[in-house]
Length: 68
Image (cartoon, rainbow, N blue to C red; front, side, top):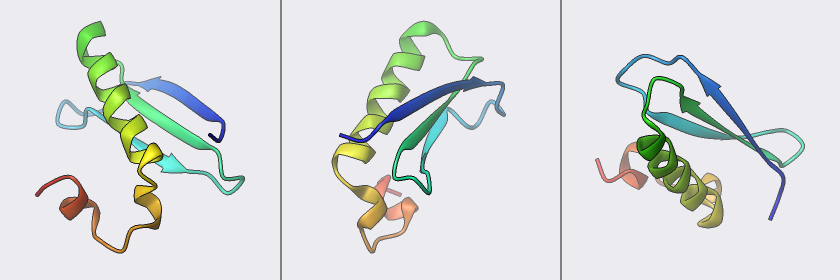
């Protein structure tokens, strides 16, 4: 698996976290620092699944991948 960086950032309450693919093919998971430890871990695992499933290479929209 590629390198994964994690950042805690004060995000809007409506944003729990997200992952982005970097130009060097590493990933950055950004987590909302306002979340509890339990929720941080839940969101972290969720974003890891996107990396493991190669969601960045899928033709579907992010809304479709997220189930919306």
